[in-house]
Amino acid sequence: MTVIELQAVTKSYPGDVHALRGVDLRIEPGELLAIVGPSGSGKSTLLNLIGTLDRPTSGTVRVAGHDVGALSDSRLSALRARHIGFVFQHFHLFPGRDAVDNVADGLLYAGVPRKERRARARIALDRVRLGHRLTHRPHELSGGEKQRVAIARALVGEPDLLLADEPTGALDTASGRVVMELLRECQASGTTICVITHDNDIAASLPRHIRVRDGAVVRDERSGAAA
Ligand SMILES: Nc1ncnc2c1ncn2[C@@H]1O[C@H](COP(=O)(O)OP(=O)(O)O)[C@@H](O)[C@H]1O
Ligand SMILES: [Mg+2]
Image 1 (tube, rainbow, N blue to C red):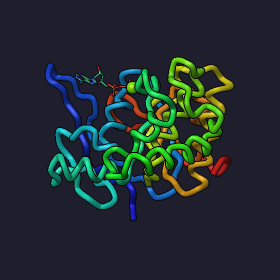
Image 2 (image 1 turned 45 degrees about the vertical axis):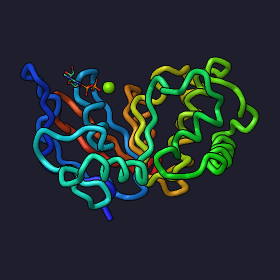
Image 3 (image 1 turned 120 degrees about the horizontal axis):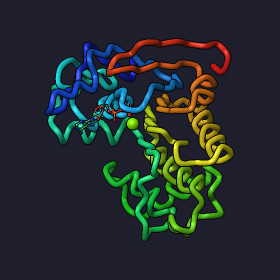
């Protein structure tokens, strides 16, 4: 089944801002794709709609076959908790809490008891090779390590789809490379992944690139290279 399907999606904001002007997009299971485009072109708006964090002004968004527009907010939260993990440029970790608790939060809405949340968080942290940083709090971690904690939090609920908005945007090149390696590993284990990036080299290294400009998809290419 198609993971994500957008049909004629628009998003406008008050003040005549047309952030998306009619986007059609299908994402199939197991894809690893980049969304690229200049600042202000609508990338984050598009990712937020794909992730059901926001609703379109017009058009349809389907996640795993469910029409997002037809769901109540609580059904939508449940759908999101079950299917989608998020990673952001600036990590969005809780400052006073250690890595395990930050990752365990990824299971809050899945109804998993606290002890099991923490056990699964430790496994997820191992997966991003942070098994030696379990009790570190965010200020005791490097930028790259913080982003790996955020990836572990996104993965702990075993989502079908991982959405990352500029995940390497605040990192040095080497840390960014590690983050991209981890995302590729996730894809190899079956997760569908959609990454926004400003970095043309990163985009070019991924099997599919969607170029957004002025709220529209202007290119959608697949390269055999890294598939
Ligand atoms: N909540 C909002 N209210 C009003 N305008 C917004 C809002 N979010 C985004 N925009 C506008 O929509 C356009 C697309 O923004 P965005 O999707 O964040 O672009 P990108 O991620 O490509 O930089 C921009 O012109 C931005 O100013
Ligand atoms: Mg953005």
